[in-house]
Length: 175
Image (tube, rainbow, N blue to C red):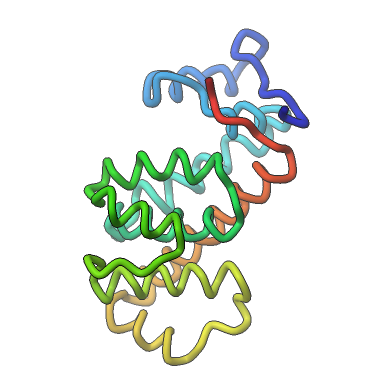
C-alpha cells in the first residue's frame, strides 16, 4: 500500500491538469510516480522538463539509456521502475534475454562492450560515485563525448532519484 496516494486527475488544476492530460495522451494513463509527485506541484513540471532534456532529447541511444535505468533500478530494488523500464527497453530494441539478464544482474554475451560499459558505469555511480575507477572512465570516454558522459551521468542520477522516491513512498504500480 502506498504511503501517499497518487493525486487523482479530477482533483488537479492549472498546469498540473495540463501535465496530466499530456501524460494520458502519451501513455494512456498517468504514472503513479508523477501523480504522487503532484502533491508538490512546484516540482512536477521541472522534473518532467529535466527528464525530457536528459533522456528524450539525448544523443545517447534509447537502448543504452534503458540498460542504465534497469541497472540502477535493479540495484535499488525499485520494482516500479524495473517494470516500466523493462517495457521501455523492449520498445527501444533490446531483446528479452538482454533485459532479463540485466534485471538479474548477470552479464549477457549478446551485449556489446559499449553496453557492458554503460551498465558498469551505472553500477559504479549508483553504488559509490566517488569510486568510479579511472580505467572505467577511460573506457567510457572511448565510446562517448564529454557532453554524452555528463548526459549519461544525469540519466543515472535522475533514475536514482526516482527509485528512492518510489521506495520511500512505496509508490505502487498502476492497476
